[in-house]
Image 1 (tube, one colour):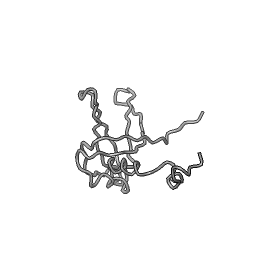
Image 2 (cartoon, helix red, strand yellow; image 1 turned 90 degrees about the vertical axis):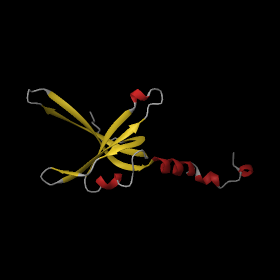
Image 3 (tube, one colour; image 1 turned 90 degrees about the horizontal axis):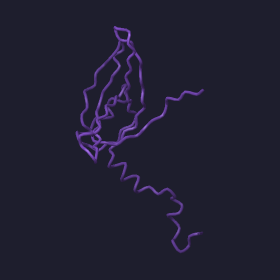
Image 4 (tube, rainbow, N blue to C red; image 1 turned 180 degrees about the horizontal axis):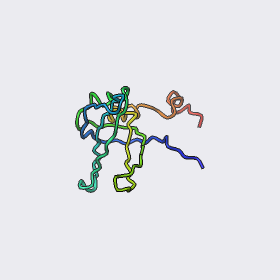
Length: 130
């Protein structure tokens, strides 16, 4: 058996809110949260609101400069923990740790400009080898 927990996922949505940086633990480790709003085109009653965490001094500032309703592209790694409450019941929580944040509109424009076959862009149509 091989267990894998290093898979990132990407999601795009509108920045709904962002928290201030707070410090946790004995070492005052910086953490910050933000929420993406993902509209449901078929039924707005079922819009998604996903909370992400930014953990560590190199990540908490990644959301700076983005205002509410900015279209963002986010890459995150899911994490989860199990804990036992005072009655002995097992409980679970899941977090999405953001590792990449970018203006979604800028990424779309950059992708439109990129060609999957740049070497073919240099060949004139009538001289193509196929």
